[in-house]
Length: 329
Image 1 (cartoon, one colour):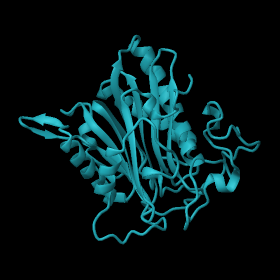
Image 2 (spheres, helix red, strand yellow):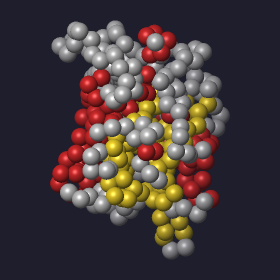
Image 3 (spheres, helix red, strand yellow):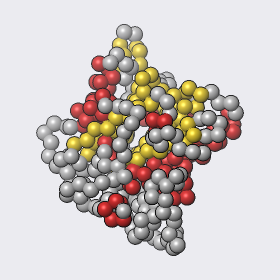
Image 4 (cartoon, one colour):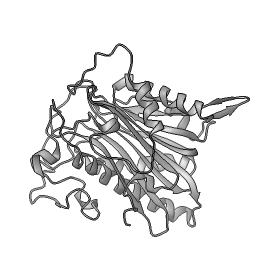
């Protein structure tokens, strides 16, 4: 397993990512899209999720393709980012055909960043505009850290951020992850700079620091945030041809990576969620063995993406937490 050429989710050919943020708001939106609709499913394992149209992604539901997936700040207000993405897609003639009408399919999920020090005293919900801008700016290259939906993210001890990573498997399939790290738990071990995800790091992508000599696995954590203030939301994607049932299993396996990289995770106070997406470009040569390997890769890639998001965060005026670079670099 090796990183793709960009080490981004867009190493899955055909996918693009767009970010939009407002510095005063200290929040933003990240959109995953493609030139053609793609298959998607979801697995929610946190206790406090905020979602839109995720029921459509169940294997037994009619719609089998989506036009975009939205990750947004703003708590429930941020779900309106999907409206902006839908408007942009509609203007482009995209959407699920129902007679002469077209309805863009845009599931989304949000993180809580309303208490991060930004100016939230808006008269008009800003998230539809941010969603529209993010979709319009979607490209194969994009920034990590304090950008898009990760621009105002925090963790239990450090600023969070937007992360991504990829891997190319021996079978030729590519797996990528995109994540907004806004966790109740921590991505780093104890008071040091090392990341919980260190065993899965490739090519020193988040510092190459390994694990500390003392591994405080028996420590009892205490919540640093209140009810509803945390969530990590992610997308794992592949070019392997998977239907919605297989993608739901891929999303479930990817949650292992979230648990490897954030301690604790999947708490009653987090809304942890993973979307899974497939462009379907690469048929499976070995349906059993390949899906086994894809699930393992999805967990590894998501763990790496989480660490990369925290590692790439940068300081802003008015920060309530230090970023990794300011404290340890």
